[in-house]
Image (cartoon, rainbow, N blue to C red; front, side, top):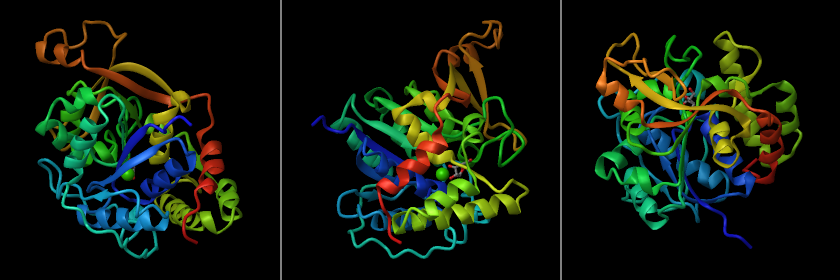
Length: 329
Ligand code: RIB
Ligand code: CA
């Protein structure tokens, strides 16, 4: 049997982060080497506790180590108000028991660096929260960018409005300096942004399927209902986007996305534009920023950027995959 490729999931659970973990496990495609938490939706200590609890909820706490992320963004103050979408402790209305696994002294960034060396050329890193841990790993050892086989992150808005401000998506906005460190590192990236994630939604009919699928998806169904209610309270439809699960899906199959090659430069010089991801298509005329040697050089560091949904139905695959890895009831 072909060994499953190694992956690290770096997350700020968070409701859709939790769903991304169960989806990753349900695909059966990956050897999850570590679950590294990062501050974002909630402060780092809370997302660490949530990550520990989720490994217990999905029965992997004896096998998958959880690491604690950086205590704050690189330069900005931690953000604490995502509770409006993710609930008071970040997992809807759930109070999940802590894992019994020992707390590990190795930080998320240290674990990322260690695993990039141990699985050089093989490791996929999927980030579904702010990029603080990945940036710290790169600042400590720029070679991380070239040891990772693939880096997929949920974040950014290439050609659509933002969600935390009119121009910025939350994960990038929360730590824009970290995002610029990562996107200017030369790491082979795929940006799973709002341009794509806002097209892959869970609607009531999808939720009904998960509610009827038995106790193994009961937790996911409750989390989704809480997320959908939050989106409705904030003026959305009776639906919620699968931001983070889509990033996990794209690690294995980018046909859920329509992508273009290009550079992504993070603007953070003003509170008005903080975290704006400026997408510069590789096919663009070279007159863009021609008067700026710095920006012209920056435009040479490219990756794949989602500009919309792809031909493969991610919502359909997500709903079919989740029951394959039952969580607690
Ligand atoms: O903008 C969506 C992202 O922000 C998702 O990762 C969600 O979990 C929140 O962190
Ligand atoms: Ca997240």
